[in-house]
Length: 323
Image (cartoon, rainbow, N blue to C red; front, side, top):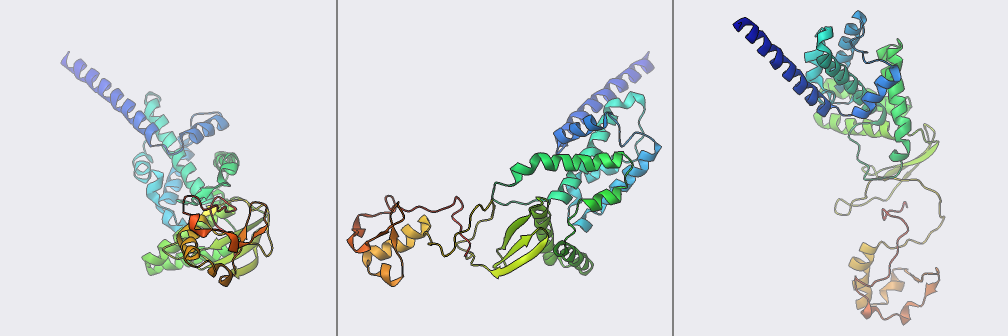
């Protein structure tokens, strides 16, 4: 009787632990919707635990995660400790809850790793009007890469297919490997950030695009993966930094007016012109009305304007122009 009670207690304790583990597992998934979508695509609930060969796949994938730094990524972003705990566990039919948890943790780690390798990790572009238009395509690409492994494709080949192949990226990646050998933490940090930004930019597959490198004050115009034009750029100071953003450029204005940003107009120029309106001509500035016509500035009563009623308009949301 006592023995039966102890066994029953152990059974209920084990079941409760598995339920708690399952809840925890669901909570820690980075991409639960993509995980569910993957199993819907393959039409079964087991991939990593499907057959004896799966153990080899789990070990190979864990080796990839352990070597994440080689790809300028962090193993801790991919459930590395949990993967180590689960990699060699064998399950029976009675372990369905724990088995599902293991399956989904491995799948979530793979999706997270594939996404970061393809889209870049920890990129914050500030204002971004491009990424949202690519979300569904990106999801399909990541899921199809994982399905390819399910269909027998080599894990290493699939991983390589997720990376950019242009010269700029390959040079940076090669330099990153050299800095790993030198243990240069500062250079590694800078290269890591740049490599992930390049992944992010390249994964959009844009035919023509411009990249402004703020730290180097330079601009590159790309046609596909080739730099077609390079020039210097004017960027902000540390105290007035150029914001980072990604946006579509739908027109180019040659010899444009420089429309003064509101912050510069009211904080820097308005106080000057209120004291000495003649400075307007001395600085080769003009006042333009709403119809784009030049106003005779000598007839303006500068004294009535304040930061609250000064009529300035700038042409884009980021208050940024390329010159």
